[in-house]
Image (cartoon, rainbow, N blue to C red):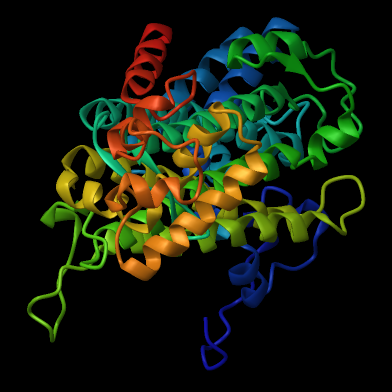
Amino acid sequence: MTPADPVSPKTPPAAKLWGGRFAEGTDALVEAFSESVSFDQRLWRQDIAGSTAHARMLGKVGVLKAADVEAIVDGLAQIRSEIESGKFEWQLALEDVHMNIESRLTAMIGDAGKRLHTARSRNDQVATDLRLYVRDAIDELVITIGVLAEVLLDLAEREADTIMPGFTHMQIAQPVTFGHHMLAWREQVLRDRARLLDCRRRANVLPLGSAALAGTVYPIDRHFVAEQLGFDSVSENSLDAVSDRDFAIEFVSAAALAMVHLSRWSEELILWCTPMFGFVKLPDRFCTGSSIMPQKKNPDVPELVRGKTGRVVGDLNALLVLMKGQPLAYNRDNQEDKPPLFDAHDTLSASLRLFAAMLPNVTVERATCRSAAFKGYSTATDLADYLVKRGLPFRDAHHAVGSAVGHAVKKGCDLSELSLDELRGFSALIEADVFDVLTLDGSVNARNHWGGTAPAQVRAAIARARSRG
């Protein structure tokens, strides 16, 4: 609604499920400003699940009659079918997902529907829905990360022998294998998965039964509800349970860090597919062209992932700022916890799926990668290690090799292109076998230890990963 829009009549108090205390209806401006059903309706699955378990519990403890429980459970199942088929009519005047479902249920089954809200509040209801949502989101993301991790294993195996330059400070440092680099990416998403699973443990605590903030006078069985909904435990404190959003912040924090990892991968892919690097080619279907320059092939997917990372970092900041000034217990501010939570989930899920689909189809330009690794004196450390093995202190070896590199720079050649006599001019310990360690293959194969870049170790790491399943 814009300022120029006419103000509609006030909503009659009777239209609100909470309207008994009020003498006039909600102002139209407030109605439009305060509704949340436009975004929280996506919690309908969790809301129906929570209400179903709550109704069954009320029947178990004798608060509701069996006939009422049956009517509620059947009615909620019918509402589920209506929503799934697109026939359910969401009404902004009913404010949120909870009121929409309860109102429809009451219209269907009468007074039994009005009894559903006994012994609960929207405060513990939404807290339950959100925890169920986060749990479902984590379960989905963990599966997607598993697919991506397998893709990275396959790519690492395919490129286990492919030599490329490794970088520090964006300067060529030492030769590594492309497969080793892919396993480094995999380590990052495995940590993301572990963080999400750890977050799931803290999210999987039932708040329902805390009611508005102090609990309820009814003889509820919260452990029964927890069992019905698959929660590991029941919250210990009703005040905390209805106002806590730590689990949502923790989830979005894990999502933001996962997006940072994907953004770093994106940055590398963007660099690698430029003509200046030429290490990889991205599949055409994951790129776009230019409206003016016909030769362009733009890496839009990595660029967008890199850009969307800022959104998810912003979602985390939004949640932190949302919670920082709130006293106990529930406050209406928390209506605003859902957009950043949903956005972080959606953005991370889409980004992971795109990478899982794109990476198997990336072409690695092996000859270009190898040629690049030959530049920048990437085997200089190998020469220093060679001298150390012959008894020279490392700092002296470092100085000798630095002098040799300076000489090679002046000549415009690589260390391996210097003659034996030239190399011996920097240390008498150098023998003819020095050229074995100055090759790219010799360099990577020499790092043949657990976690090293040697092709044998890359394959061993892949085998260990696959044996773990």
